[in-house]
Amino acid sequence: MSNNVIEKVTELVQPITDRHNFELVEVEFVKEGQGWFLRVYIDKVGGINIEECAMVSDELSEILDAQDPIPQAYFLEVSSPGAERPLKTKEDLTRSIGEYIHISLYASINKQKVFEGYLKSFENDEIVLDYLDKTRHKELKVTYDQVAFARLAIKI
Image (cartoon, rainbow, N blue to C red):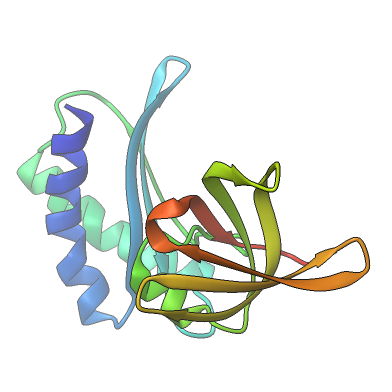
């Protein structure tokens, strides 16, 4: 049922985000404790602000109230994906070239599955990451299908 809700809400919110030149990053429908949460993550170049999130929330709420595609009670949250936003698509990776990112691999490379560094390039499904191993710069080359999860990261 959760996937059906996500698909339906995506269909409803996409025209709203397109009209305002926002990016629809993700739609989640999850149960936490006793409550259900419908979370819509949006962004734009330069970052999204609270007023823009409220505007999308208001517009989406009207449509959801009129169409009532979700049978149970839920809380609607529209927000930014945050500074460590997930990189879910190839387009996300392409846009993030030069950024500091975190990647987790399905299988270890030299006994390591998690890497953080600068995304040097993403071409022909190959990710090239410049990372520090202690004090030495190293380069990691992996294919897109080796990556279990990727997100922007904050360098500490």
